[in-house]
Length: 167
Image 1 (cartoon, rainbow, N blue to C red):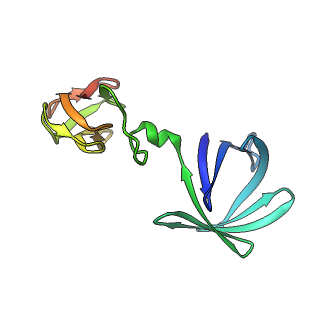
Image 2 (cartoon, rainbow, N blue to C red):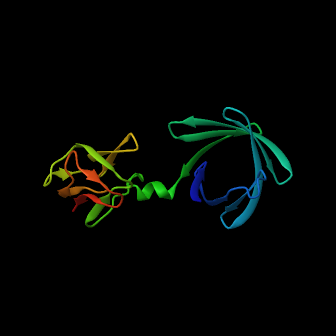
């Protein structure tokens, strides 16, 4: 999995490869350089990391701005950016362009319609709620525009079926 990691305003490209063959050693490629590490959870928010023959105790705390990391008496502010979240239309400030079709990720039932066809919507605004596997998920608009087409409340949908179109 590829991530962008920002630590104290320095942006790094990180690719994570999980441990193989039940070993605790994981591989990371950081800005094109291979790094191997082992991590063990000591307690909630505290980890022991073996990196390059050195042992580090790292604590991790979630903050409103991301993560606060403490290691070797130093503090680091970090943010992990997962590009997959951009594809779901949740990337900060990212708005898709052109005609957008929203499809059902899995079979389910439309339990609530929040807007009407022809209505103007903003990026991130809820369009409808789909229930799948006893969980309700709000489908949001990936862009600002006009709702061209919309599934109806009570409709059963299959995976991949178009739920809404925003132009």
